[in-house]
Length: 241
Image (cartoon, rainbow, N blue to C red; front, side):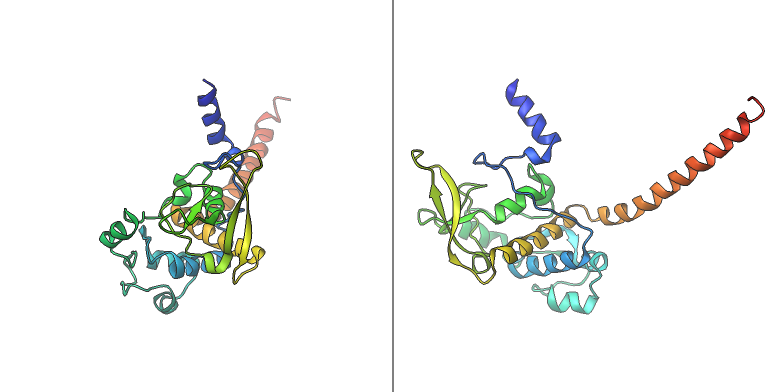
């Protein structure tokens, strides 16, 4: 019963979501209302992620239209596979090669920001939680997803983190510390990861951008309708009083 209640609380209150190791997830601050952030996130995904991961439910043309990216720019800066503008976003790596090198083909990331407990916060924390681990074939491990076969493809940007173990608790990682700085400062890396998470949040539900913009007009319509209904009510009840 207690376990079921905990799961229900995690589902209802995203802020209570925990990583696999029991540590609370970091707040991503994900927002699809920042076009510049979404554009930067798209560029980051294509540069660092699309070599292995696809976005099988998203077309490049749809992303370009939603994010305000001209077709020629999208084809020049975001298309590394030679795909057509209207094609779905595919990975450069062949699935067979992924299975050979990583043990399984890297997953499609179309719904990654929606499918994980904690949503964008899980993804944000995951991308900040890689650390060097010589015992792993890839040389990397992750506190959010221990034993992940994915290497830390962003290590040049973030730098190399090493685990600090809790005293008296063998094997329990208390925190990660930056042992070798990367090209970006910690603040710059956080901002870059937030852009990437924003983009993947958009990809998980592209219609949310339109729904959000239409929501303002719906609220205004309901407010105007309520005011007119109030005036009508006053007119009907004038003779009664």
